[in-house]
Amino acid sequence: MKVQLQRGVDILLFILLFAGMSFALYMALIGAPTEKTMGDIQRIFYFHVAAAITGLTAFALNFVASLMYVFRKNRWWDALALSSAETGLLFFCMLLITGSIWGKPVWFVWWTWSPRLTSAFVLCLLYAVYLLIRKSFVDPNRKAMVAAVFGIVAFADAPLVWFSIRWWRDIHPSPMLETEGLPDPSMRLAFYTCMAAFLVLFLFLLRRRFYLERMRNRIEWIYRRTETNRMKGILQ
Amino acid sequence: MVLFNLTVWAEIPYLLLVFVVGTLGFTAVGTLLSAISVNTKLREVLLPLMLFPVILPILINAVEATDVILNSSDDAGLKLPLTIMSAFTIIFGTISYLLFEHVLEE
Image (cartoon, rainbow over all chains, first blue to last red; front, side, top):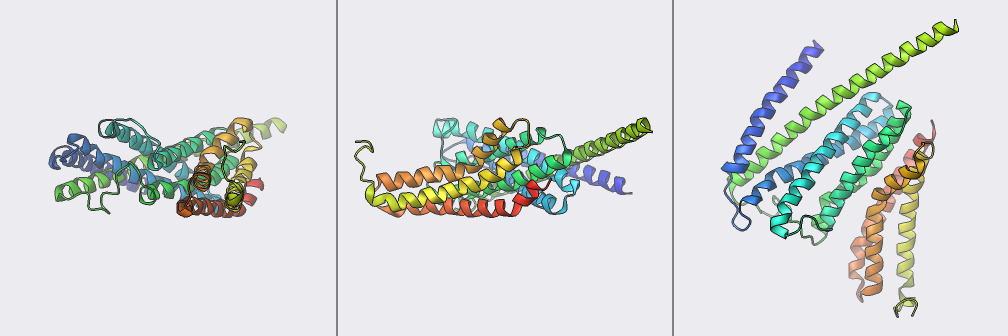
């Protein structure tokens, strides 16, 4: 019954993802009008911002899951923290790549060390390190605990990414929705559909990664148990 | 000549403030992360790898604040870097204080 429900949710998410992504692509590439000064390159904005917000959501989820792991010591939360960090890192890489592609024709450089770009890059680095330190521990409980502590510390940088363009003068554009930067309603529609499609993509990937990790934990547990039984047999 | 003809004496209280706040934040999170990495095989590599990106907000703002103190005549530009530094120091201090036992208990 539970398995069937999960399968149902998976299929529903896949259908939503397919329909949402197709519509978002159509809206961003064809439906939205061309921007006056930047031209067609502005269309990357819809994916860039959606990737940023989705990535930050993923890292926030990692933060919550890490906190829960520290207090509950349940491997379920650890698996959730790991899968959200990995998916979040994916979206942040997407963010940096689309940003660079946009920056080259508009700013004439691929990269510059402005507060926004630097803080986003550092956040990306932090979660790469998060995945790296997980590899350097053998004991699974110790690994989960260390990763949870690092996940909590690492998330301190995330508000800086969000507020950097509000606190400093930055070459990066201001937040479009707060400064009325999207005058055309179909531009706003394109942005919201991209946002929704990316969130569905995030949920879809998160669930896949989460089940993979749960299965790995289970296999590891079975392996350890048989090993212990074998040792007991030898001792007897 | 040593200090490039900067008039440092009047600015020392501000500089001390930046040093103290920056060092506090640095050590608070540094202690937590060294407690994490001390038992691993890769500890020489792992500690700087973890610590550097984490303290980067404090580091950059400390540099910024020192720059404002030494190079600019009005101290209005000092407010933002010093606020961010202090905020991070408080956050890191609290997190380290709360999590330290969990890290050490195993």
